[in-house]
Length: 337
Image 1 (tube, one colour):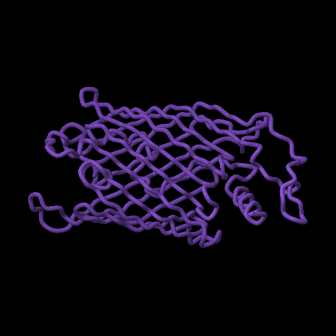
Image 2 (tube, rainbow, N blue to C red):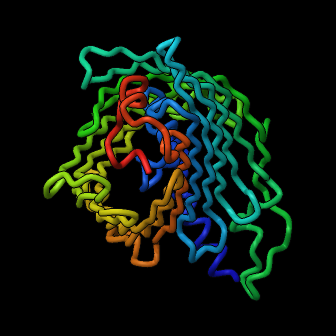
Image 3 (cartoon, helix red, strand yellow):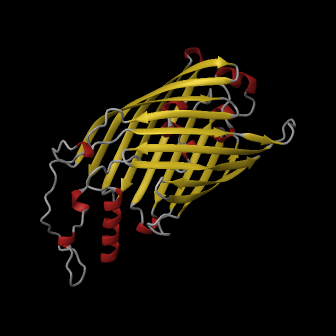
């Protein structure tokens, strides 16, 4: 047990250092979390769309690192606008030691330059709350060196506050058609303070998160009515937040109800993980599972499981595909069941 506590604290200290520890959780299946990726990515269907995401990072530490997200968005053609709502909960530490909650309202305005090119400008405004459960912290002076048991007392001082409430703003831009998408977004433009003390240290702010993403879809074979074609979809995501840089690059492929893929996540300094993906789609539902194989120096045990569910009611049978294209514009295969 002592080894587990020390290891967990060591890992927490790496992820949340004293300075500049604030960093957004990221999904390996970023395309399945459109509201988190970019506010301009909402409303890709002219019917309601629901996205659900679950990520379990470092499972060797039990349930110490969990992220949940959900979003709803819908396009309204009469307004040339899309509206959405997203929530996210990120938990670090067994039993909810350190928790972050996001609630965002999203809006995107659609511009149509041609019948085959759609551009969206999106904004998001929301609420951010972070909490620290001081009673769950275990410091080194609390551990009895003879038996590894916790004494329950420490010389460490509890901070002035253990709950933080902040307003948060962001925006984005995206262009797409049925074969490609490209976009960019910024979050936390107000750089809200996340200090649990009265410190004015700029390193205790939530740094601006900027992202660039792009993808293409290539279909193989001839078009045959009511017969699915094999497709290949290269995708790229670049994220910068404070001192953190991340690049996800890889390819998805699929045919009919099945899809899969392989991606590499790189942190500029070194390769971080290989991401294996497999999934199935049927009707309005698309379900994906991914597994992160760690290849970074932190060790081979630092993996992650992720599950996504995308429900797009615009893909219901019987809906006029041409009408859907005219209204919201068709999006690449990777975003639609």
